[in-house]
Length: 217
Image (cartoon, rainbow, N blue to C red; front, top):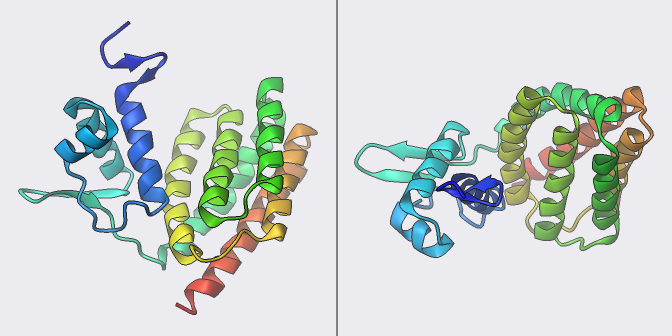
């Protein structure tokens, strides 16, 4: 086995995913230090994978690095939500439409399974947000466009941080769950126009809910 690999996933990718998920869930809050040695000890990875993960997180604007001070979790700007949604409305619709056309049978089955868990699972914010993110990432992968998938994953990470911060005390809305299921159903039925429309409606409606909460903060 090549150095730095476990199975088919690089150690740096594993480290990145672990730290990213903690940042997105706001378990690592804005401004928290991302100390290489502390992360290495707590996550069980060597310094090299941790450093590579932190460089990637910095490029994706989830972390910020200061000379002679170190790396920290990036601040959350609530006003970014509207700008992120402007971009994601176009790209999420495209990803859903492409997924309806290109998803493999295995990917369609995975989406159905995730949607079932989302609808019938926990309504607690942390559990729901994690599963909702998995549905989005599965749709991006099913689009079979690496450039689109990479861009959308970066944008959804930034948006989820805002949502998790502003909605942390609220349970999942049944209407939001139903709208996400509508996206999956359209993809499974290979209906690209319906998938695009459902994805845009899902994102637009939830964004409006988030902004309503943000304006009251």
